[in-house]
Image 1 (cartoon, rainbow, N blue to C red):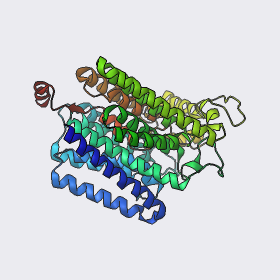
Image 2: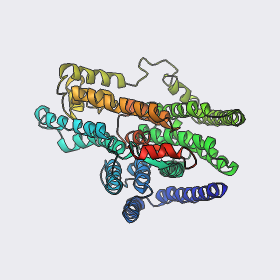
Image 3: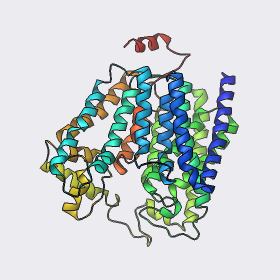
Image 4: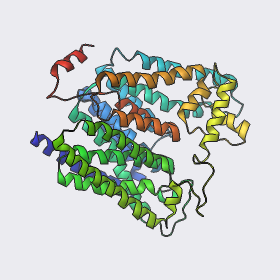
Length: 455
């Protein structure tokens, strides 16, 4: 076991060095971004087909693309905006071609079918200027990504070590992005800070999306401090945690970092309950260590921003005055979508019509920031059924097995992210799927695993 951990740690260090180099190279030569991404996707495709997905290579490839999607968009590596979501879907479909899906995935097939009547509905409600392909792709790629991820992962057995590799694939491109930003915006001394989202600190790209990615990295790195038993690796992860934590906080977009912290708390609730008296003391010390790291990040960011970050997280403006709306306008968007559902409860207004509906009623054409209210507004009663499926199915799965330490954290990430950023990126849908995996510990419960395989 120690030998396996040593090999795993060596692999981690090699991947880390590779991705720190990746971030630096893209900073020096931005034109290489597309070539590198194309090479990554081609390599993943070859490995999946060559190995016939025997080691869940498709899941690892999808994890890498989902984790790196924001970075790929930021560096103009994508060929079109939804490249990341489409790639995640394609990799998982190829994986299912070789290994199939569980016979118990019927609810998620129904969920996917439910999404498409809304496409037909919008053909009756759209205006002359409505960009049909663009709006349908923007609003459906995320939900379809969730559905396909769920199809692949639901009741899927995965070895504990392979599950850790999936984590690594999620994390590495985000670390590369944080390192890239370290060179792109090394200091805030000479930049103008925006309270609605600090584009100056995020390389000119959307602070909301970058905050979401960094928040996930905060969660992944923090949990590694509890699950990896290597002082050297723990020190490295602590340094990386400071780096991604700072980049997430200084984006001035609160959602991603708050979500990352809530995910960590959700993880610790389950992880802590499974500890014996001997390991609880060590866990307590690690919790204190994480709190210290978070405090360091906050204090440094506060000094860098002249205390403005404190105002942002306490819902105050630059003058220290309390703002009326803590949601920065999101509640108004939700209200228009609930109004659309109230007036069109059966059919909904159609996929992608929400933006146009807001422009007609509020005079502002803004895309949805909340996937729950968007489903209701654009899909009507079918949206309610879709919500019931994606909420009830994982809960019943959890109560049946309870073997995934990360279940609560993954569901928290999905739920929080779709409530502040909808499904603009693949991460919430993909991470939702990870919550449905059945993690196999080779040393435990062989009889129970055999029973699962026969279901």
